[in-house]
Length: 267
View 1: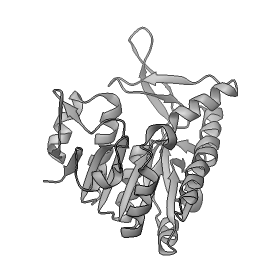
View 2: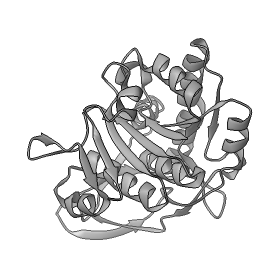
View 3: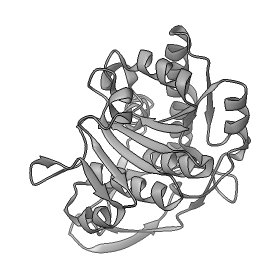
View 4: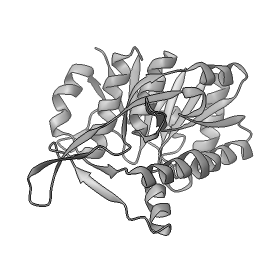
């Protein structure tokens, strides 16, 4: 069982051989795809006249501020447009794909962040309403398992339900980690635009969970999220996490073979 996280723009961000590679891999192993799509959310929101706000945490992490209207746009783009575009591309290439969101079947449940501590324009800490961003607290894999049993390739968008049944924006990398943990997957693969974790201008080909935790303060924001998600997946029982480039030929096969990527394991 393999869970793979891809970006939302599979045409622009992934190598042209990726879809054929996904098809080949799905014929050998059970495969689940989780996708992102933050860029498309921003583009669509701007078209609708909804300016997107971003906040910075005390740790320097920049993220989208999701108010109720933005949460609705996020859900529309992720669970609607992007999810179905990816499914369409897979179906066109002969992959029996089925698109769902974290809402369907109650797959992803999350705690709504009631308050956020941010750094304002003057460099000072302030507390604001948490909006509609969530931290996943549970995964019900029943629907995913049912699709896999019927030979479908599930394609999941990272939209979660709060305890009050609101739509929540959840991080795609961490959604993939939690899905992998719930499915007891052998591995989770995070496709990105670089070969893996780079420290001191050198690609780290293998790192343990403890080493990854120690390295977190030295890792840039985008990669930090992927390493954090990898650590969480391993703590939930996934055997290994791989961070690999989606812009090389047959990227999924290369990641599985540990070719020019970062592999994170318990030991």
